[in-house]
Length: 553
Image (cartoon, rainbow, N blue to C red; front, side, top):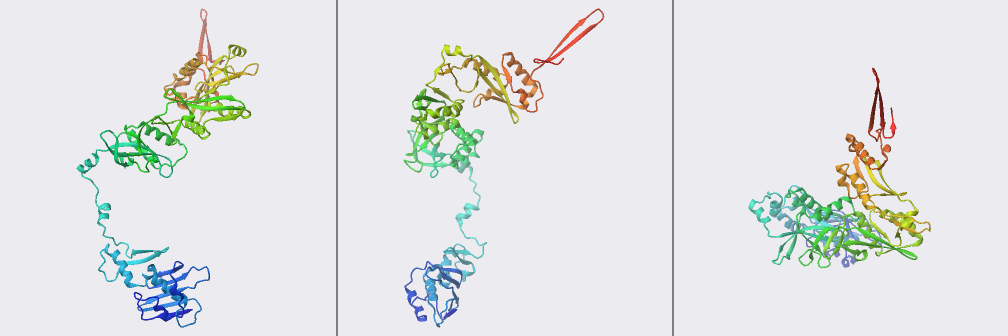
């Protein structure tokens, strides 16, 4: 191991040329890039260094300062009583690199500590090494207090973090009376392109236009001041969209959207156009109308050999608008005439998005159409109108060929603790839930398809007759093809017996009662008939008990 001592030296004044007196090597003087040199460990007045080198392994060099002497050692095999090339290079590096030199240079270290010490009131202390220490982490030098409890004298920090922040009532009222108008802004996230709602405020000109600056309002802070439950939900819904990154629909998100669109505070609504400006300003905000879409989808199927063509339309402002003319904005809204209309039904939204993603018109080859109709169109028809333009309404002759007598049926089924009640109208052998929009088709003797018109009036009377039997049914008119009751309500106070009796008297068939779980009840009300016959000194009583068609006695 090579070892050498430089005596009577002062790091503060030592130069690279002074090192030439202690070595026969001179190539280190020309080195200016020390990025490959790094300390294995380093502390005040001592460091162990090496170097990342792709040419050869660099030895370990240790440099220690004791008073005015610099003790140098190296793991190389240098036998000369002088500095080896490795030691000279490392000392040169220490002199040139401040982050290393500060560990060995008392004057430099004190000068560097002094600016830090002033914040603690320690600038007049004679030995700052007693209060501060150096730490080198991943090439970055930090000055840390040795005594963790020492506190820097930062008056602004004390006032902000330590003193009470209670405003006087006058100050609070002054903050509230800003004269600014609060608005609701629709936009997209700056980075993720997702829908974002924001509360903003700005002054208004005499003509009613926004005036810069337009500043953000924290909806979460307004929750604590809101008193009405609907207002609290409104602020919460806005906050949820400011931290929302979902790309797919979920139920809670849609409920929040519906509440925002209700706009219980009656705020003016603006659309933020990022193509004009990234930040919200009077220039990039355009006032719009926000409402919920009240419409139905209609699909039309045309036979255009060798394909079947499927198109879609929406009824907007009493006009049928093709999907190709529909503008989708911010995932959930249809934009038309400066109005954002929320598509509040996920199934409707899914259909529109599918058509928009597939050029608005679907072409299905005739060889695949029958399967597409049975698997897809038939299921869609439960919820939306589909016009099969190539199928004509049945003629009298076609109807007379087959028997399409109407029969009303109620199906019961149980799922967990709830019982579904589905009113179904039978047209011949075809069954259709009265809430379904499904059409009825058949073929004549020649194989020609035809459509059978459903009896809307009879189905409406049937639905009304079912709905009248329980007050809960009126709230269940939208969204399902069935009514439902909890099992306890279904069996409560013999409700089902009364309802069944009304329905049977109207000629309605009830199916599925015996399939309900843990059900030992009879679906018919007990009927008791007592007949008494008598003579001069005797009489007989005959008792007959029956449930429906069943006679027990």
